[in-house]
Figure 1 (cartoon, one colour):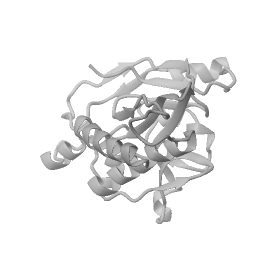
Figure 2: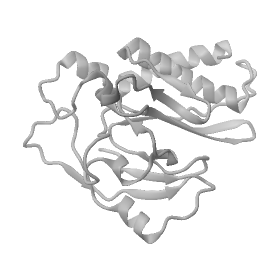
Figure 3: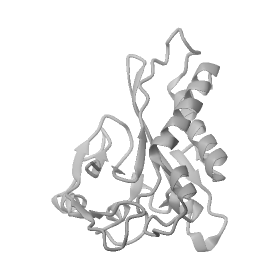
Length: 221
């Protein structure tokens, strides 16, 4: 079963206007990656929710891997982390996975959290976010975390591209991308090789990410 597409608002974000809410909650058409052209798409009515994280509006849905470790930053079982150091741990773990598994080079932006792909080719548009970051901390225990775009659409109309309905994270001069887009594996192309499909399998990516996260957590970053 596919997860329900969900738009989340930051804890300090103003409530949406009725028009903004209607735009986000309008029916969204989702296709399973690598499905045949005659396969019936699934239409969802996205949820629109407030969250405990900072920042502005973002999206979670099918084709995205949500990685939310619950971590005691003062645990005796690993070096202690500040919130900033923990955010860097999440970003660095993701950057390592993208580079080692897919050959995708990324960078961090101190002013805009997350994991970014730099645009060295003007035809590809501006720098683009491949993973969004949002952390909530209570009594040094973390919740929330990071969401990595794997196969979800990042181009197209508002009927199929969830990002076209709002300005992601409130940054108008940047774009959004996915692992599939960066490696040239179109989820609508049924001829994509089995090897590529296996590399893009969310469960396999989650296992690899978890192993690297554990290694870095125990090493102190």
